[in-house]
Length: 355
Image (cartoon, rainbow, N blue to C red; front, side, top):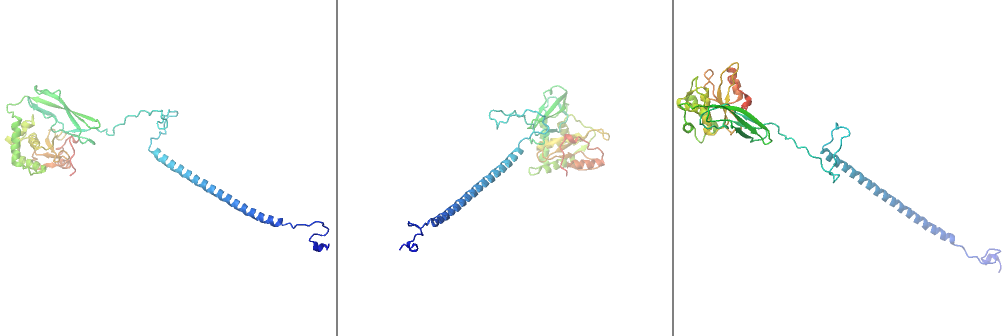
């Protein structure tokens, strides 16, 4: 009965021993702890990965923002005036009103006008008139400008005394929209009227009667100019001496006597152009080493001053030539036949079309 093999106790023990199961419990807990540790570490890795992602994303955003800001500042800076590399060292910099609200902007220098070219006055010639007559100072004068389509013309005739014979200065002044000015001086000679003097109203009436016969309302300006040329060519004759004191009186003599020199042919053409409302200019030959005498002819515009052509109704006896509405090039070719016949100041009149 006391055999230790049947007592359940170790031999030599006087008390009962309970079996110890803690090793089994400790192994299960260790497994759970290891699993929890793995999960903790996994969550830690995930947090670190998420933090790295967020930091990387923020870094990219910051870099992109900095790049965009640099590009904007670069392009904006290109539009601003940059300091010249030759600025003297130590030059005082003006405060930037945009960066300093209390600073005032430096005074701006006035902008220089982009248009510095003065208008051009064309067609100015010496004038002559009779005592007591009226003068159209602007007649035959053309003002052009490279930018202003309508430069202003003012004529100063304050020194002219139409009641006393003499020679007086006359000033033509042109101003464009930019304030550029040009002044051209000429003279007017006032003389006693001859006994044969004819009132201007009578002369104009005579010219209108002729135009009513040779032109119609349906004609173009070109057709009317050719009609005037044809009438003069068929009815007027050249003489060497002619009174050049007044173009109106000379034109009347051409209309009534049908003869005159180059001044008479120019004068009657001018009168008829004026009565038709066609812009026209006076051109004169300058005396030169080949030809020492003056020659007079017209320039006329068919489109209200846009383009101009030469018109010379004086007969060419040596080389019969129709010089009606011809160009500068045409006159240059004629000069090959008769050297310096059309020798004039090209700067004083407008250029013609090439053809």
